[in-house]
Length: 360
Image (tube, helix red, strand yellow):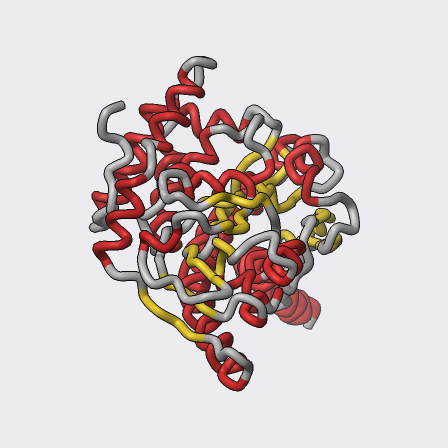
């Protein structure tokens, strides 16, 4: 009986489940200067963080304890790069538009209008550049961070108080535009009025400007269509705007399984964000037409004739060459970067209205 009892006891012990290994909880702060109602910021939660959690849950070895500080709780828009660089946050959205001095190559798409209206395709090109263009990668990684996901804009159009009948009608107009994008008016005869979403409405309303060069995703919530109801669909193109990045010291301290999960989640975020931008742009245009149908005058949408688009892009000086030459003088290999960017667009089937890399 003692022998039998021993056999039974051993069998029970062998059948018993092995003790579960303790799951390691890793606390990380994720932050942004903008609130989560901004689509690409909200998608940090719904796509990047959620996909990271989903991947890690498959093994159960690690769990991220997210400390969320969105909407400027830790820093404002003028400190997105340094806040990730210095570890004020572990992960954050870096707004490259406002970092021209530290991220000069990242401004390239702002000097190549009419190159592509497809944000998903453009972000795919930017991902490839991070993997193949050493100067572009170093531009980001020199600031003690690693890029995980990329962000961009929807396409730019013109919103005016009076109908814009043709390209020639731009001559003498005053159009509000954000910072560097005022360059897109050079050669048109229009005068750029530096402004932002917070100033556009008042500028048009008070006559400081006759209209706005901007994005549907900004125009809708800012209600610019109330004072500039004539939308001329120029399709001037999309621009690279920044990245989700993680502090390099934080990154180096993460287990490989967590790093791999974040890389995969970042790729998913980038792809989803690009596709979302395209859908949101179209939806925002439709919404403005719907909301503004009963106002006086009603909101109207008029596609710019292709001949006028060509006249516009050909009237511009070679913005890209000016930009590249200025950076080359400082030792930044901007010409090779610009060539690679334009090649990347063309290889994906795009036909830029102007080949900005010609004559470099």
